[in-house]
Image 1 (cartoon, rainbow, N blue to C red):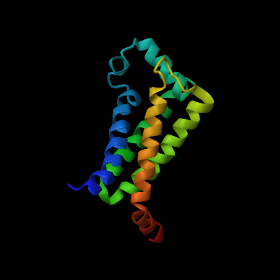
Image 2 (cartoon, one colour):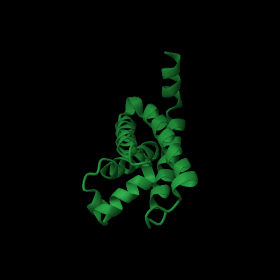
Image 3 (cartoon, rainbow, N blue to C red):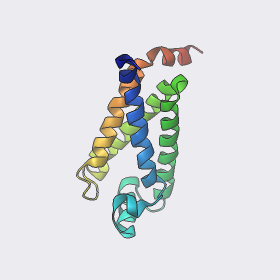
Image 4 (tube, helix red, strand yellow):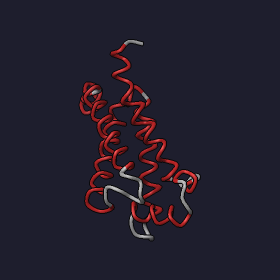
Length: 141
């Protein structure tokens, strides 16, 4: 594999890994173990991140589904551009939520979720530039 290919595919892989890793949190698979915290703290964190109790599960699981779709598309070369567009949209929503609603630091994470959102945003932006011809082909269809 050439250096050019590594530079092209590494952002896709990094973004997909981060998005897939956070699915553990979104779908509550081993949530307490994932955060190394108690169940009540896990529930309070998801409430802080995803909002009111009536809508928390819908937003959390809905976001998880879109992140799963973005991850799959990022790893699928023919559709990586679409996955990157979806990833940028999701991460812009996450970053705006962190800045204006939930705070940079959530549950003593030291800003880790915000940093991960920024990394995914940067990686997906790189993929969009790499796959601009692919995206233009979708528009011209």
